[in-house]
Length: 199
Length: 199
Image (cartoon, rainbow over all chains, first blue to last red; front, side, top):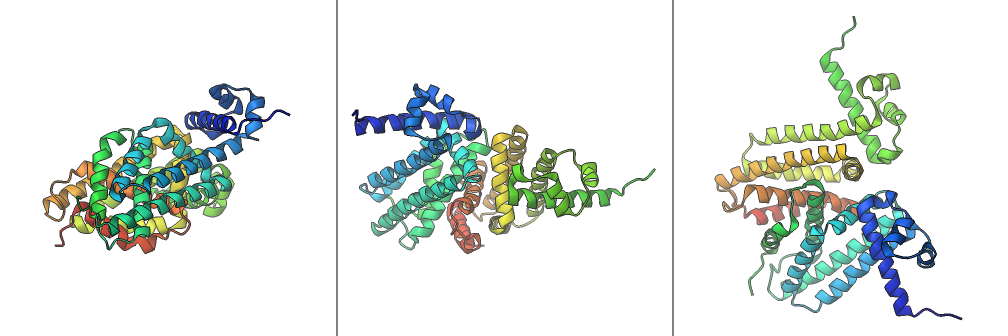
């Protein structure tokens, strides 16, 4: 009996998800056919369907993968000095908002969440991961005396998440908004919000 | 020849738009039929089609009306003391985010903008109205010594708009987010961002 190396299997799965994410970002969920994903991933449809049952399943897996990436990010940031970690988070948010495919995929996921309860539940789970990760960083930064100790970590994390949502929405509604040009402004705003104390 | 009183005609048009906005908010654009809008507005389809050519035209008119409301709001705020005006703007944003129909309609408009260039252009026009109105308030508040005079009004207005976008997005992704409970936090955050000087 032929067995598949689990590491190779996972690599193939991630390859399909990356190809699918590009297709969904560029054509939207409705216009993307599984044949497009196969072409982008450079594989046969038989091979694709070995990994995923349907286009719907692939889309859901793309959103789940975004959650897994978020979890890995915050696990990494948990080991860093909390203010540095917050700054790295903001840098990453700017880089992702400036990535045309990622920004369009984010919009497409929001649009699908509006139409599909399974996607809405996944988006909500991912959002909770972001907020709990940020609340942890805010709490640690306050304990370390880097920011206003009177800040409630949960409320502050909610509004930091709102600000990052807003950053992505700016890309959608304002064609002249250039995220990378706004990097220092975003950091300045967050420093003011949190009353950052230079270390 | 029978003529229609222009004031009555405009009142009827606004009545249709309000009914249509409720339908689009509750059922989404795709699921709303013109028959639903007629029922909600309490009028015949012949009467409805006297005012609008299609469901698409009604949706576009709803978005245009939102722009007209925004324009009227900022014309009103232009006469007020600038910090009071900013506070009234934030209060209104909270009230609208807390209005389930309005919050859902906002999401539906974003989703349609993603699929329809005519709606995208209208959304972009409305967003420019918000940003130029806010930039004017920020500039006047700075001149009046109520906020940090070093703030660039255009950049500041962009980020205030981002924060309000984020407020609406919180409603969509987090079922526990209650806008009215966040009213004072939002005002505190904006006061910190702009380094508000109590008058």
